[in-house]
Image 1 (cartoon, rainbow, N blue to C red):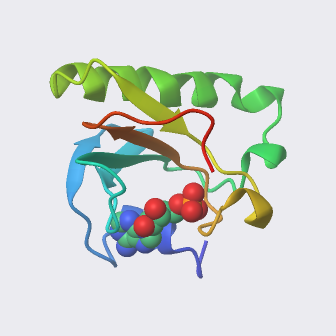
Image 2: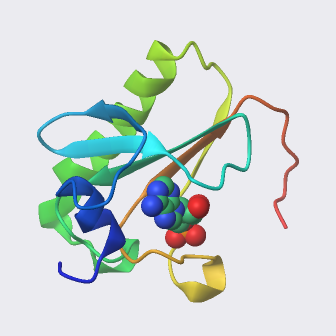
Length: 112
Ligand code: AMP
């Protein structure tokens, strides 16, 4: 999508600190990390938010979590938090589905 910053990262128009890529997903370090490890995994398919997925995306969304497990294993990260913000009130600022991997420090629950 033309005005989507994450689509521009996928297309290489905007640089990213890439940590993983396959034909379906791209993962890169968050520019504003909230923990020692803060990686975003995005599907290459532009879907604005989780509310927009349908059953046809089941494989894609499952794959997003499999990619997260693979990346964390590669980084020897055993304890981590996975976050998907959906909608502005939930803190979503980029409207292209992304899974945050946050780790490398202890975290409180519930979040703020
Ligand atoms: P969210 O608030 O859940 O939509 O998360 C968007 C995330 O994207 C934030 O944590 C931002 O720091 C991150 N972000 C925005 N632009 C970039 C970029 N160009 N490269 C890496 N991370 C970015």
